[in-house]
Image (spheres, rainbow, N blue to C red):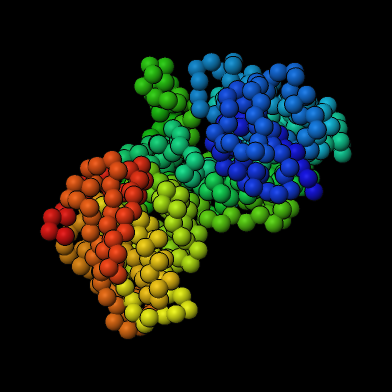
Length: 489
């Protein structure tokens, strides 16, 4: 199989995670990225075309393509709703019609569970529920109208081109930053019918995997794409210590509309809803073999951590390796950390749990175990390469995130001598039970006392007689911006 794929909306957040997966696939020969600006990604297999999806010459761009992935859509609200509808509706129709005229084999359209409309329904629903949209909410309305057009088109062109609609739930991850995530992780949240509102958070890697699978199969019609489970907004608030207000929908819409007109809010009352429709993705899983790697709750925890907030409760701490690595991805990329043999664990402490990153020794074991607490203000991922080197030298290494640091629970950046001592004791106990023997605690040191205030901080971990210099990413959301109660540690 050798595919040429065209992707509209090549500068979108969706494209930022889908394009790398397509470009890495040896069966994808080339990709055409279509947007009004150049894509963020540069690759020898990627051809960039500057074009509006409403242009008639789009058919010429599609000629020779096997698949079209349609991602272009106005999501972030603009004042001109006529322009919004024109881009979303006329543009999407032009994509479908142009693909057909160009001889494209299949089209994959990014839809949304918002096509079902804002009505709260029993959880979860499948594709048999009609996508009613909402004429008073531009995004809900336009997603539903695009689906209606696709259904109409398929009835009139049976077997001529496979068109699939992937109804995605709320997508989160390091590539996604928007007003909705800002609101969901704000200190104060406000929702109509807060006791009933829920979300399904889908991690961006699972989104990319879903689109990758759809590109390589003749799927027809709508498919829900969401994770296992869902998170009620009250649970989401409890995970991060958010103050949640239950507000009446009507007045909340009026207030949001006024704030939007005055330029005080990035969104109007058209986005004031009681959560989203919770869906079952069984049909898509059976058709493609797709399985989400993160549950809705794990993805919600990753979203909170990537916003620079900590998880407060032990029950919400990330434990599975895939979930821990998803939250650590920005730091992993920055440090080029060796994560192939890394394992993760959470151990209980008073009022929560602390995260351990575990590096088992290679074949030549020394029989010695090292417990290394990350310094206050940092987290274990900045010591990963050092620990990996020690593991190759025969040491078993357990890295420790202090309370409120990294993936450990507790208020971000707050420490006491007692909490640190308890965390170290718990890490030593875990290391003793896991590896045996008598673990040795090694405390790393920083280059200077003001490293947390400098833009480029360097950590010197004096381990096995060597000085290891590790750059620190000031944009890492897992690093506390302010440290309290660390005197004498």
